[in-house]
Length: 270
Image (cartoon, rainbow, N blue to C red; front, side, top):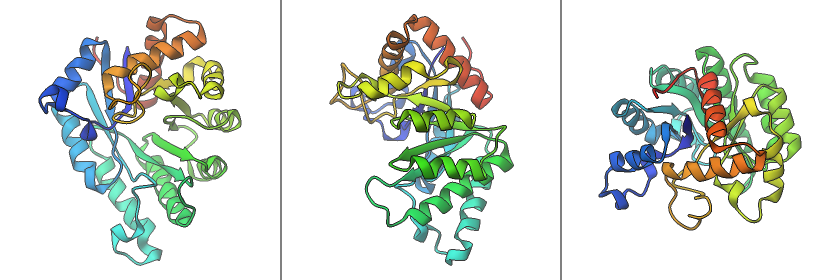
């Protein structure tokens, strides 16, 4: 079954569907998409993504603090208490039955390294609470592969891992993530002309560790590049990945659907 393992349904451009999220999801279903994971990126959208997951049987949610959305001042606490504040919030919201994972969280040093310590503190909090709750982690990493791998090794749970979403790092980072038991999810970036190195990585990741996603409304795949992305375009990601690996689209959909169910502990109806 084809599953969009990472989409921001609260941020979609719904104008083609008369402002209706129902319309956007139905268009994806008509294209063969059988499930959606709606991603939380901060305290400001946690309630909304959970409400979306409660409204649609084929949508689940995550909650977490994206490294570029995270601000220590958000918690209005002394620095020594900040980590405890993050953990308390994650434990509370992460227990919701429609919340499958914590994140997206992680490290992003691309724009600035001034808040590295705060990002790392937040990431550690997610890893530790995920271990307590027995839930996977949705990992975002950019220009921070070494620190990301190190912190997972030090604080992550070896028996309940997670996924490196929208993977764009090197094979060395991919191999380290796989060795830690993590899955790798690929987005529309693999269809871009300048992504030859990424396609080489996507072609050799073990079959049982693959996921596909849109990261919509961002990163629309070819032939929709330049447009607002949406969940129905995940089929183009899957098609490209299947071609890279020399298997049928149906096989790729089945494999990634089974991987999703194994990682997150849920199955979608057929």
